[in-house]
Image 1 (cartoon, rainbow, N blue to C red):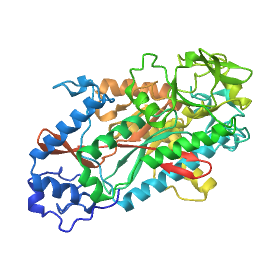
Image 2 (image 1 turned 45 degrees about the vertical axis):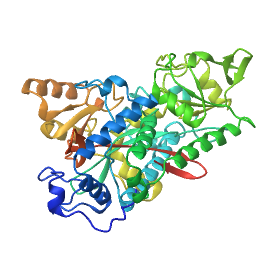
Image 3 (image 1 turned 30 degrees about the horizontal axis):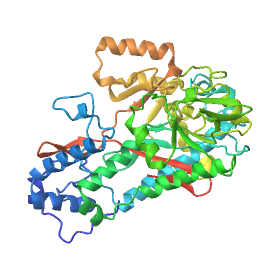
Image 4 (image 1 turned 90 degrees about the vertical axis):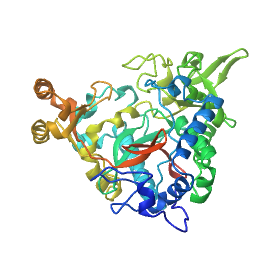
Amino acid sequence: MSAPNVRDAPAASETESLYQALPDVRDEAFSADRSVRPAWQGLFESIGRHQLPVIETWQREADRIARERGLAYRYESLEKDHVAGWRLDPIPWIFSEADWARIDAGLSQRLQLYDLILRDLYGEQTLLKDAKIPRAIIYRHSQYVRALVGYGVGDRRGEIRLGMSGFDLSLDATGTPFVINDRYDCPFGLGLALENRSITNRVLPRLFRRNRIRQVGPFFESWFQFLQRHGEALSEEPTIAIADVDSEHRDAEIGFLSNYCGMMRVHPEDLTVRDGRVSIRALQGLVPIDVIWRTTSGAGSDALESEQRSEASIAGLFQALRVGGVAMASHPGCGLLQCPAFYPFLRQLCRDWLDQDIILPSVATWWCGQPKERDHVLANLDNLVIKSAFHHHSFNPVRGCCLSQEEKAKLKQQILHSPEAFVGQEDALVSTVPTTRGRQLIPERAALRVFGFLDDVEGAQVM
């Protein structure tokens, strides 16, 4: 987004009646002197003109459109006091053009760096030979697909390494963005982001026009062209399918993406591999599939060769990838890259491989597989979040400050018993943004999921 073109910014006395930021915490809409930041002036001018009841009107309109479209916002999530679901907040998180340019550049750099890491770990493995990344991080990771070592080094037709990727960002007390999580293996939320933008555009059309908000359509067009180009390496008229395991088609997000992108939606059980080609079983026989956009974890996607088993597996898929009989977005072993234990090593890798300083830092992280870092984590549990160093489902993150003395002692024993399995991360004080609650605007700490992919022709694309 670029900053709105507003003639007169709302006075501080006017905005104080609309919104109260938390004391001593950075707020993205208001500066320390209580003036509205330039990017947010258009929104607060609109709220000030209509007064606070308009917020409730916007929320009702957003709920109505979501119901009418049958989108991913389940009806029960709109019920009073229902906590199982969630609803769209019509107040957008607005970035100035300069702030967004930094995020765009930082994630573009990050995609390039992680693409090189993926290519090396499944190729020459110089990172391991030169001890740039400890072997324990790689070989103990459940998402490291040994069967695909040698695949993903860029010498097969249609080969895709990093497809659609997700990044969770927050801003610190100085307004500097940093990465909390990387999601390279079928990140959730792309369809929701598209739905959010569509609904918010309907609810706040004038704000969108005045702020010259960047459109998301071109991003999806680039993504489809990216998949199409890889499919054309296999067929003159490629067939692209989006694969998921929801056989009853209850997942509205995947259905929405399938319809929006004009792709066939398939279940892995309907796919088969014959002579190195993936096909879908149809009434007229086997129909070849050239590109698969998967929406489930890749490590278990081959029933014959995967060390894990998944309901989304296709027997013989890895061999089809090796012989160039199908393209898959993303590389089935890219879940390895989601490992937070990589974070302490990224700055040096960025300098070594890209000859650049990293633009978007990761949240401060200490891998307990190193004695000095392990001791730091054990001595500072109250100020850290403890996570699994490997797959994020193997250990639920815990905040040290929320544990009892008995729980802390138990956690310390777990870390000492298997230190390479844990990381400690800074319990960062992130900034707040305005959110709606009835007729009020209240500050909430926030994280942002951004999506992107690395196009081998057009370069990195970020939404």
